[in-house]
Image (cartoon, rainbow, N blue to C red):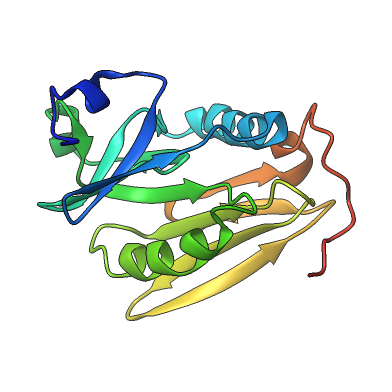
Length: 178
């Protein structure tokens, strides 16, 4: 179940992630979630690297696949792949209330141990706030960006105005406090 060519994997509109042989479905997200992911993916086109949306899987291991909201690869080996990416430089997640714990927990841990990953970006879809986790040697440094900031993506030597990422969304400036 969930393997390439299976009925589940063949459904384009069914987003799924595979963990240890099991398939976990992902429900549709809000329009603002989709817009911020699309806006960032569009802004990343300025790099010489290849940017993929969540249609492309990231292979974490032989039995574990995830679908980040955006994946950036600069590695030629990924161009030869037919089903999944294996050498990402940047991964982007737009957490929703239902995925926040996973994106900040299990995925963050898994992504930080991924050898080619240099930046992990979390884009808030409820308030204008973006976190960039950047690998510096053996440690990870977090930068937090808000309204009026340029979001820095060090591994791509790229700065993107935060307002460009939130363009045409209904996301408010105020930060949500739980």
